[in-house]
Length: 249
Image (cartoon, rainbow, N blue to C red):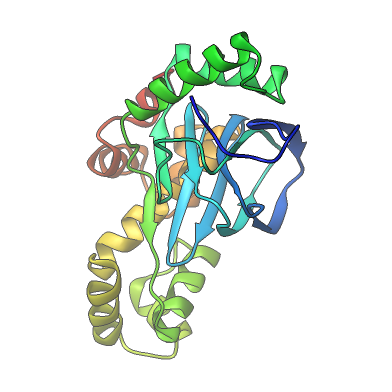
């Protein structure tokens, strides 16, 4: 693998830390792309006009020099790899992937072994296998498009503050009408307002489930009056039940 970089600069760097609840604005360092994995807990990462929720067994790819806002409701164990951007075949756009057991163990092993230097044949082999695995991983449906119109953004913020609020209440808090919001969300997110809210609520519930909330607790917190209604909506969005989703992929 031929990569141009500064003398003595590693090809891959690792980062391992447990963050307390909170929010932070982060920018990947110029010249480096990032793979963000949560070993425990969950985070939501906002990149430009979209948000990605990253629960356990999933990872987010962030290209070179991507500005992000990261939030987490509880403590989250973050494991990151930073790649010199000249590494071949790296994705050019943010991407969330499912991380099965082998790839996960390989990723965690490389974090511990970092920094990697491709002059070392073992390091070179580890990187080659990891990149091959990452290229073939399936995308995870954990993206939420965000409206840029101030009225839509206000509605999204109102919804996040109180997922149990009615659509009429969300519109009132955004200072506009439901019909106007329907137009904004359809045009800017590709989803109707109701569909967007359902997706936002299901993704928000992933963080609660990762913190140990029961299905009943997580569903109630995001506006579902019964566990069965929550499970049905969850399956419609993510193709499986809450319990099935949090099993190892």
